[in-house]
Amino acid sequence: MTQSATPRTAVPTPVQLMDQLARAAAGYYRHFAAVAAERGLTLMQGKMLSLLREPRPMRTLADLLACDASNVTGIVDRLQARGLVRREVDPADRRIKNVMLTEEGEETVRLIRAELMSNLTTLEQLSDEERQGFQNLLSRVFPEPTD
Amino acid sequence: MTQSATPRTAVPTPVQLMDQLARAAAGYYRHFAAVAAERGLTLMQGKMLSLLREPRPMRTLADLLACDASNVTGIVDRLQARGLVRREVDPADRRIKNVMLTEEGEETVRLIRAELMSNLTTLEQLSDEERQGFQNLLSRVFPEPTD
DNA sequence: TATTGTTATACTCTATAACTATA
DNA sequence: TATAGTTATAGAGTATAACAATA
Image (cartoon, rainbow over all chains, first blue to last red; front, side, top):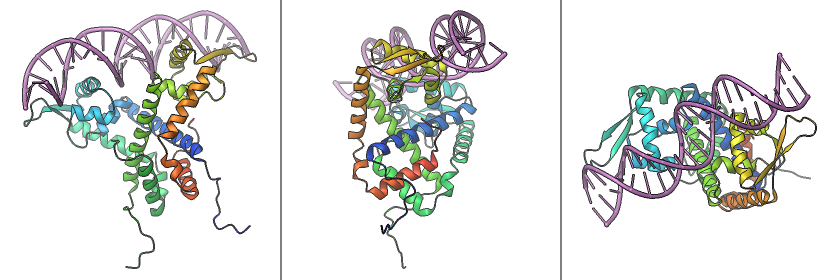
């Protein structure tokens, strides 16, 4: 009867936790897609812009988006047509085209990230220990190779 | 100099934590899509099957997948053509069609979930406290309305 | 009248294969 | 030869609008 901690919720099984992760991931993308849609962008277009904090080769973008290289052509084409990104041939290897944000693209990314954060205000309410623990758990369950 | 805990990692800012969530969500779906692809299913088809632990109306599925109702028609059509789901008119309200898994569909879901879990073995290595804390954080940051 | 589900349409995303231009 | 990027193609997902059936 001597209970040290006071668990407000039951301890989830690994499978229950997997389901919770599924809900969280769905919630994250539902939210992200809604924010992107506010700016007339699709989910993939929003993800693409978010990856361009630095100029990146098409090939790298395909790897980061986990899709075939041929898809990147179309996605970048459409973003370029809207003036949000541009291609630049790599001087060192002329096969490579580096994709980078235009000024309007930079502004769009800023707005998207701000909007994303404003809907994740919970993150700001977490204590230092909670944030650190959270990051630790996330990086253990989903190691590096992503993004 | 008297430091109580021993943080192996720095305390992330809320924005850094948001980026970590983005990586985790991307990692989750990359993994999910790969598991679905092993069975010749797309991501959406895999998600659809996962939602059918109970029979559900088309309309409900559209809400859960956060897409227009017209899309559900096509997704269910393709799963039905492969014998994984079937439609059944609701006796109480004949406008409603309840979608449910066939036996083969049930088996497919079992296999997908098993494969998903086998690649998330990290979850089984977490302590009770860690799992509980993880669930707590996830449910705070991504409240109910999803799935 | 309102709701459920479907169809038609147009656009985006997707992988595959074949191509080019560079290396 | 190998790699980066594009094009062509076909299939799948997506929202919008209009529709039939049911409530």
